[in-house]
Length: 149
Image (cartoon, rainbow, N blue to C red; front, side):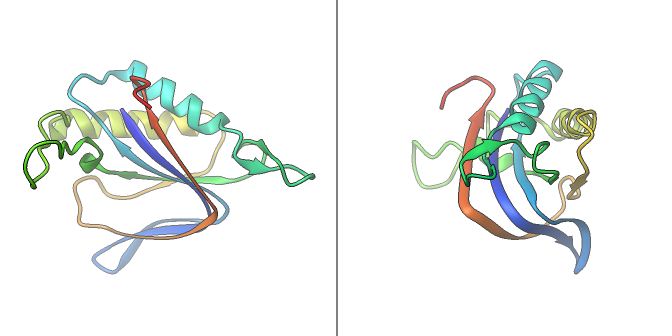
């Protein structure tokens, strides 16, 4: 499972000109699911993301998590995080999970974040979405449950 985590002052996602998720201060999480992922990876990333110390404390040092900061989380499915561009010019998505598995783990991940008592919004799985954000910092973190980076 892979995630691009962006600290935002606000973010939203729209489908067909209708807002499906909207947050203020918090984290935008673009989430990709691989063929090999299980609930174990979803639990790992949900815990890692909710406890990442990337929000400023009273000394303006990144020592607070989204929980500490009283923030929110917007989760958007993003199968293209598993695009392999090493050969040719068209990404291969062979490592991405099939839609039924990816959707189940996407929903599982969202529920794991909710268990942390964080307000969570989300996009619509497999929809063409427009994601709007104001990156606060900017702060962007790449995470992989296989700890590739």
